[in-house]
Amino acid sequence: MDIGLKKKIKDESAGLVDWLIEIRRDVHAHPEIGLQETRTAAKVAEELQRLGLEVKTGVGMTGVIGLLEGGSPGSTLAIRADMDALPISEQTGLPFASKNKGVMHACGHDGHVAMALGAARVLAGLRASLTGNVKFIMQPAEENYGGAKDLVEEGVLENPKVDGIIALHIDAHESVGKLTIKAGPLGAAADVFMVSINGKGGHGSEPQACVDPIHIAAHAVTAIQSMIPRTFDAREPVVVSVCSIQGGSAFNVIPDSVHFGGTVRTLSEERRAEIPEKLEGIVRGITATFGATYDFTYIHGAPVTANEPGMTELMSGVARELWGDDNVVEMEKPLMGSEDYCYYLQKVPGVMGMLGAGKDVGETYPAHHPRFDFDERCLSFGVELLAATAVRFLNRTD
Ligand SMILES: [Zn+2]
Ligand SMILES: [Zn+2]
Image (tube, rainbow, N blue to C red; front, side, top):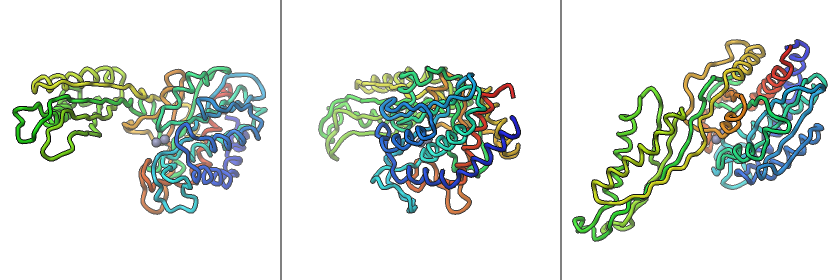
């Protein structure tokens, strides 16, 4: 990259520290659940408009798209940030803690909003030297709904056509100034299953007159937990967790039915495709053995999130150049969590990097914890990396 341009990006990003913190804290204090991000979206739209971007609001309900056109025509890079918070009661005690009861930015999306706006500010200042466009996809409902899916269906990757996409996710487990990144699977596919075991209720003293669904459900849950690891190759991760079970309401009544359900996480589409039949087969066999019937529902959620190797190389190369080789860490293992960023990655080559945001003092709480917080010094690093990666992508003849 042009040395003058690189220095400009570094200086501009560093100069935004106070402004970034202000944005992050404002968004943090006013968190909104997915598809209700009206205040956040209005603020985002206002900032992007102020920078002279072409702004569309109400995309996928509350999403905001900003288009920055460079000085000369070329390809289009998208920078994606999610805007939604979680249904968690904040316990950080921070001066800018959530003012919305029971809602909290506990995944760093407040930081993502600030960084994308910061990158917009830096890139708007470099507009004349950009060959192509930067599209800012400010997305709703990552946590609860898979908002990215609706945005893709509404055509956010078209007009102009997006040629590549980048994003950063706050990572409170790594130090500020570091990027953790890997090509290939980064996050798991996340599916949901639900089972009803239909037996025959009756008096607790007369199980012989009943078909006891609690007993059968206990067998089914145990069989699921033992069959899955004994059926699939241990080198290819599959996580099946039964996370809820309901049945019965009295100590002396055998109920008619029991319901349970859970989550399935896989890292390959091949493995994922095999799970529904396997799970249903276990339930079918167990219920048949004990003379009950069952209902089985399997819902496919987000697919595997997989970083495209070329885009991964691009972002990690830029980070090495900016921060040095020692500060770019190869992610050893993918996360079994899911990310709706996968819906963009299914359509265009892209990458998500994990931006080091760990605090030097105090305890580190994981994302989605009521005490989750991160070191705000990471924000200007994120801006610098997003902006420099965008420039590198667009001005590829550099
Ligand atoms: Zn999250
Ligand atoms: Zn997140």
